[in-house]
Length: 458
Image (cartoon, rainbow, N blue to C red; front, side, top):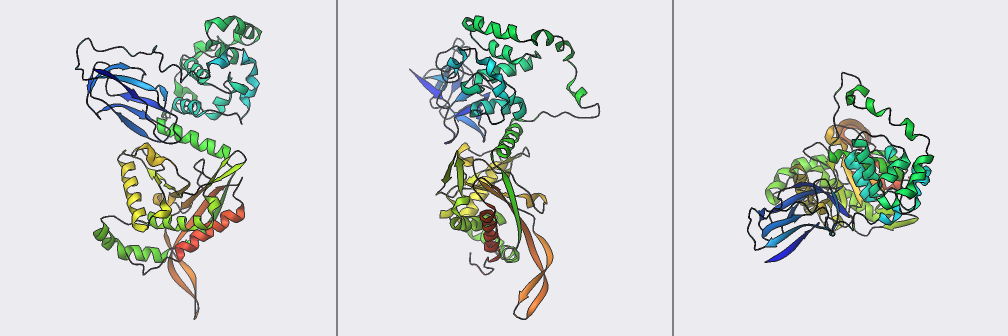
């Protein structure tokens, strides 16, 4: 018999940790090869972790809702063993293996840096992905996060800081910043932190409000309301949107285009297309094809910002906003869209959309996007002002297609005709995308769609 370590898998190139959502197996349970052991969640998608061996779970090293770094051992399996009443072992929270990764910032707690709390109010303070993940899960807004005193380098909030803050908040114990920091320190450092607490004039005044806290939460909003707790995905989306607006100075340009040729071609070709290729043709692959052709002409649209450096991406990976069964939106990515024809893009669009509807998206399906398309017309909107999907620098929204009377120029003169019209809106990061570039790219996409060949062969 051998002990096999089950580690937290890497779910994508930018994913550094994941949250344990639910254990399907516990210590002492028998598990088969590739059988689901637990469910995990990243800031992109939920996934199942299968067993890498057949045997008995001997140790479960993390609890549900724990945030675990990629590559950390999360359970151990005794291969070749069978379950027995004595096999269950309590979760080994005190095992040395998981401890080093989450507590990498511990040395920062030795000096009494709680006095640096004023820097915690700086809205430009850096937050690690781990801290942001915990904040999103616990419903801590950016404004609230900025008030948490940090004990890390340059006043940064560490994992210990935010976990202690969450614990105190759940316990309903309001504390001044200095006390929050001291509560996370080892007993050996208490003497050095004590003067900080004593020097703070507010602690004696804070205990009295706590007896009045147990009022119903709805009392803050009136009586005739329903208070709904955000689910985990909605919290992550909210945090992602707030950070995007704080990161990128958004500018949005608008235009309209005549998509009559596209509408007529699709109406004529959709049955034959499905019969020939087994795929339904929607407008989305056609829009993506036009976007790819225009990105080739304007490669700066396909970039990201790293400090004072512009990273121009050679791969063109188009994200498309898709609805989940919960009503939340997610952005699966069509990889290397510039290497695929309309059929290839259509297959990817349909596959990813179906996976989103059935909660079957893998973490890699949402990674690596370089530009995003969102179809606000699906919900009846004429146009929208989309928020950039960080770290990208632009996002295109297409509105609903409406018939309108338009002036058409012909060799015989101007005529009024009924045409299928659609508004396009491009939000872009004004740090590196000027109005001229943004408007030029948007106009190019509109021209590309209008120039669609109505006699195009399948």
